[in-house]
Length: 299
Image (cartoon, rainbow, N blue to C red; front, side, top):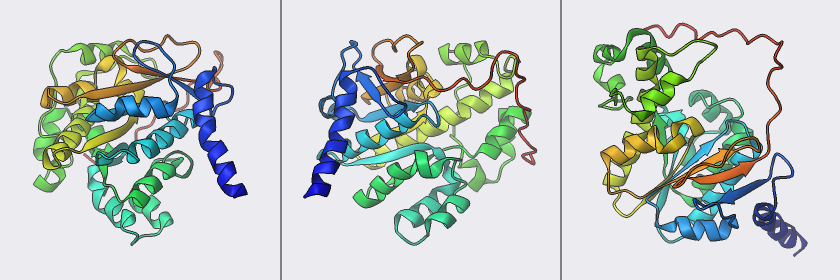
């Protein structure tokens, strides 16, 4: 009985955190598109009508990863069947992911064979274990990093050189038009350098592949819905992955949850804002950028 009471208090803490500004890096406060704070249970009921819920993340932020797991747990308690889609696994590792979900692979081997992201155990283990316990599918939604790097170096025509089975790991169609997402990406600077056209092609290969992965799943599973975990840039301003999915499937209702720190403005409607604490400053002004090495992808 005491353990049950403690577990109940832990779950309630997630709701209480939404009634006040985040106090620790584990706390969050969810606001709807109109800027109103909502307890998570109430928010989950409002999100029940969405076909796709995309939860943007600040990679490695404890509150965001906590929120992802707590939201998934509540969505799993709703009657509509669902799947979890993840940026953090690429299509070429889908079989490995399926074997692990079936209980036929230990976690150490799974982490190694799936090329799981650093911090898997702290950041993404709760999501995968929730999915495994619930018996839902997990989509390895992303394009393989080594292919994306080659697109960034050789351009989108590189995809035409791939064997058919490897070509299937990336979206059939890349969105290379001069749209708002491209303008947003090209305005950013990475390690002090402006992006190239090839680098944008690499960027959108991630977005188009994740969008296509979700679209294909929902076409094959009518009535289901999907929750996607993805870096927040991929859904900022409703662009990126969200935009590419909406272009493929205009009928889908997509809800976007965007994390913001105290020094940032809330996301504009129709995005939801997930207010979280500020992370430590990575580098002071007089500290050099770390070496930037992509490695040789062997294109």
